[in-house]
Length: 393
Image (cartoon, rainbow, N blue to C red; front, side):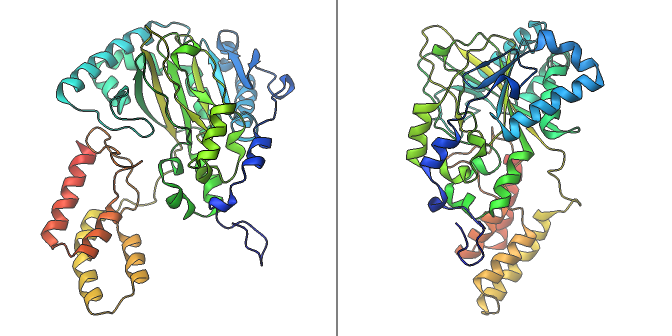
């Protein structure tokens, strides 16, 4: 949405989304001159042979040059890189696959692990927080699996040092359907209306706070449904609104690319890249990937604040002020925003899954509901306790 008087874009909405502009932007071609360290370019995806590049990671100057190239690709070019042979030895992959299958079996038996963001529940096997579960179940395997300089270099290329790793396993069985096209965390987990409330510059910033990755645990030919990607789509400024539009999703289906992967390969991409897991059309491949969602170290507040205690104390005051007509709806909302946690993450997606939406309700959303529906203090305190239990379980 362009401010007609001042001539700049303050917010994005559906009127900001121009499919023809998007088509032109995503019709670019990546050239070898853009990615001098790449072994080849496949469908606008630069392929890096880590068997050849691994020595460069031990040399500070060569490593810095490689990371600078990757950072440029993520930000200003194709938006995605593929690392062939990211694992020199795939034994840690095989052992991790065993661990993940054990976890899948355990969670099936307990009916845990429900809910998915962009696919129907039950269409695949999802292990939420595979990072912690793998580490607790087999710490030595975890050390060998994540003690991988290629993965670390990709993360640092986009996020810098001190990043925070999270991971979720996705196993798609033969016949498993594709996801819908989307962008990812943070604004990618919101509806178009929610995303539109954030100013345009926040849409730009959100993509710098997270890096998406995927480690192939089996050979993944095209028929098994490796991730569908639309290179250069992360460059489209209103994309966090646009990906909800059917016309944009239809174009994604027409224009996307897929790159076959082998066990031990990895793919990393800007979270603003339009992407989706593909349909598994194979007859005998259980496509397993460990999805890495890596966050910037800077996604933290300055102080530790007990927002639950504050919210419990504040609600009765808000009720009194509302009943007395002493505060407008906007003033009440502003007070809640200053007090309660307005964001539902981080959470435990096993016990607090995104059922019925892209994210579970936040503390602030619960507080607004409590105020609107006239909950008692005890009801609100119990709701907060239940939320904390779901998030921490």
